[in-house]
Image (tube, rainbow, N blue to C red):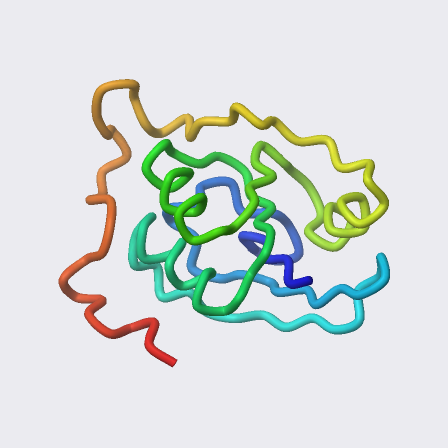
Length: 134
């Protein structure tokens, strides 16, 4: 199983759509067997979801997340554990132990109900063409 965490200096980054780094955890039999950090190149919500899908990520732990990103993750087959704060390593350990506290209805605080107010365009940015190809 592969778990991704929106990542910033050991902690869970709190705005999925602006994540520029993930920490990936490979887990087997309820324990972490390897980790690595990977640059995401901050290409917007849908591109980040597709990026995680291309890495065969099964689960994502993050802070705030908007509706379009939630939909893109679902389409990519990535289970979402949002609204989580604190240490990335501790959150993954709690997920594997079945004790992770998360909010299944989390919404990004930077996104309004009708539109966006976070100052960036959502989705793939023209400047990111091909940035997530393997």
